[in-house]
Amino acid sequence: MAVEIRRVRAGITNTFVLRERGTVVVDPGGPSGGRAALRRILTFLGTPPRLDLVLITHGHFDHRAAADMLRAATGAPVAVHQADVHLLVAGRPIWPGGVTRWGRVLRRALGPVVGAMRARSLEPDVLVDDEGIDLWAYGVSGRVVHTPGHTRGSVSVVLTSGDAFVGDLAMNRLPLCLRPSLGLFAEDPLELRASWQRLIDLGVRMVYPAHGRPFPASALSTPPSP
Image (cartoon, rainbow, N blue to C red; front, top):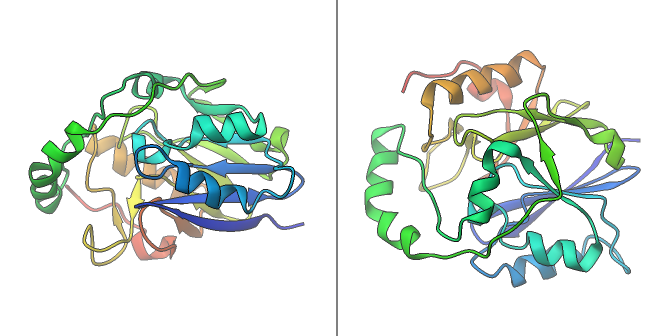
């Protein structure tokens, strides 16, 4: 049985619903508050809503705005890498530096707007370590892989089919980029490129970014220099 993949638009962020024997929601984001995103996600979960895990690829507010309400509505635990717990708990957004010239321009232009936003504090239920976790325990054929760079605790979901859900490790969306690209913002650009190579080595074939359209991994097979 193949994993069913549904994309839900949550503001500027893609939320993904992965369903096989169980159901995992990746990056239940949305604008501050997350209520519109929550309603869209719940339409895919049935009545009563069935959900086994909420996975946040990293702790930035646009990837987890609806997480606490989704947990309350379904009882599903929320998972995040242990290195990003402080981002969930903090009420103030923390935005990594720009990797490229365009990334630095965007950060300077939008920094004051992002800095003024506030997010609810969120305590996770499941802490992912550097070894990742096997998602079969939650009914999905895949694994959570530690892919730091954008943040220290960034993770990706890699299905046995070769599909990967990478958060902000890569993107494919105007006006951020014209074509598939590594993320424009990173705490550690070297780790960002190493994490991309890790996914290539794992045999990833199709990439689902949190911002933009899915693309074949071959479109970005060699990590570019910053």
